[in-house]
Amino acid sequence: MMTLFSDACRTHQLGNMTMMAGLLLLASGVLGGYVLDSYLGLLSQVSAHVLVIIGPTLIKIGYVMRINARHRLQLAY
Image (cartoon, rainbow, N blue to C red; front, side, top):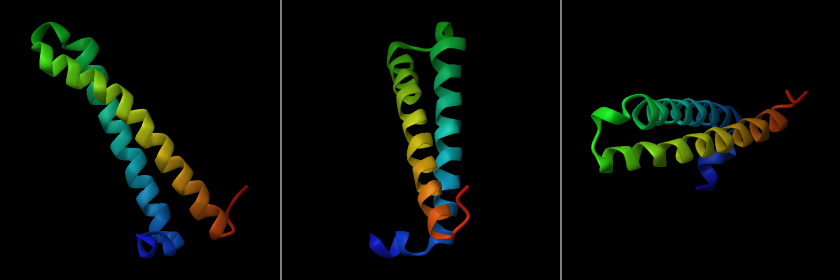
């Protein structure tokens, strides 16, 4: 696990991908939970609302990974 985060460039890329995945999960959760809710069954609506929680969590984790990588790359503001 430590070898995954030992390279700052790789950690920065992983943080970007994590943020994008979180954004996609959040968008699909909002779409399924609030826009298309009348077309979905109960289990699908519950799953969509769970994505509304998981999406921002991944965005925050990815953001912290990027901050860590930028600090190690001496690119922090």
